[in-house]
Amino acid sequence: MTKIIVLAAGKGSRMKSDLPKVLSPINGKPMIEYLINSVMRLGVDPEPVLVVSPDNKEIIADNLRKYKLSFALQAEQLGTGHAVASARSLIPEEVKNIMVLYGDHPFITPKSIERLLESHKSEVSMMTAEVSDFSEWRKNFYYWGRILRSNNKIEKIIEFKDASDEIKEVKEVNPAIFCFNKNWLLENIAKIKNENNNKEYYLTDLIKMAFEQGIEINSSTIEAQEAVGINSPEELKVAQDLAENNIFDEV
Image (cartoon, rainbow, N blue to C red; front, side, top):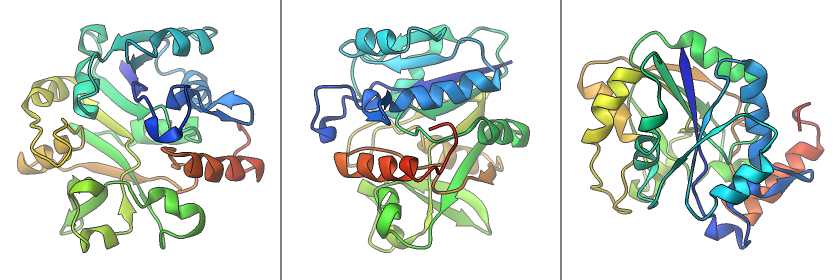
């Protein structure tokens, strides 16, 4: 059994809107609804968990009321690792794997989610995206974490705010689509430290942790346009343009 956790607690202050970021509209529909629809169409988890904040739970739940969802509260925004840990009480004992998605990635399709699940053979699996440069619509990826490899194996993810100028030139980026063995995740997520520029508990630190434990991180690729994320009005405009150009039938 797989449990899907969708992170949606971000206030989205950069969006310059009173709406929670994940409710920013694309073609008149909240961006998170496209992702939830993809999850539900796949049918892997009949009741996904959304991690929300006390401030945005009511409005998000109201906008997604036609879906069967559970809600975990992240009382303080202390990072993505902390967000996933906030959902711990909603993970049934019989769950074997946990997939983590982000509510501000509207274009991810059921097929890609399924492909990640099929490739998940060990403790940690993830998807990566690669761009030729960070111009035009690809500028949305510039502030993403960079994938670092050793002998072609994923070694760690460096978040943009912690990256050197050299690392910022890396074109393989982290679209934040992960699948973990439940027991491994729950054992190791408590070990994450906030020793970074943001003083946050990064979920991506689990990748380095797995590498140091000798675990090979399974990876598969996702088309960059499908992996587009949204953190600002400018990035929302890029996503809207992609949607209007019929990049994906679901949008």
